[in-house]
Length: 240
Ligand code: PXP
Image 1 (tube, rainbow, N blue to C red):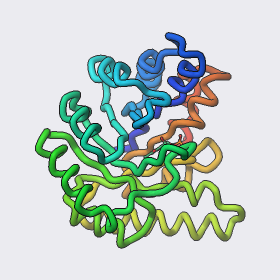
Image 2 (cartoon, rainbow, N blue to C red):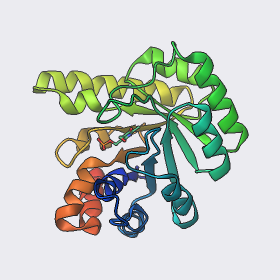
Image 3 (tube, rainbow, N blue to C red):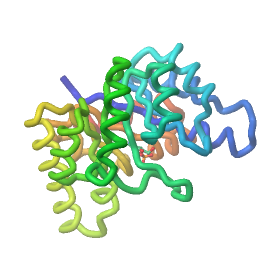
């Protein structure tokens, strides 16, 4: 089975919120992404509600035809929302108000108690839980110990590598973390910073069954439409 593409539609909401308008609608964008072959819709409900709003989450829960992946901080507020709305998957991410986007993986050892509690509550609500972590073997092992079902490996450093040597080294860290996660029985996803130029080496890693991609797809969709933007990415992922 091929990798599932999770299309992150946050930046459709970013464009809408820039004018506090009713459009463009991330729900419509999600439907178009699914029609083009996306296997999952990913949204990040941030504490400051800078893009996705609570209403988007609720409507997407009703309209999403594939899987709904909610990225969120491990706070009481968010766990309560997830428990009520019941996305198929919750990906716990670190969140800092001043950041432009999620800058690093979770501090799985430092925040063990709060994460363990969030994982437990969510799993009690029949929600699959993934932890967004750096490609680090200790973080993989700690995620397993915390009772997560899955991990999502942060590919930011691989994507930002400045030369081939650095890129290969970062790619190997992703490969090693993916293998370690898979051996422990964890489902393994990857994401952050992936685009049409750098996705293929990550897509070729057998242990990774899901990629979450936002900015690059939405940026291309603005110019050529969502259907083509998603199909172009799927073609690269499949190595056609
Ligand atoms: N995965 C996670 C956990 C994220 O937080 C993000 C950004 O919201 C993405 C994937 C998508 O990153 P990008 O927009 O760089 O493709």
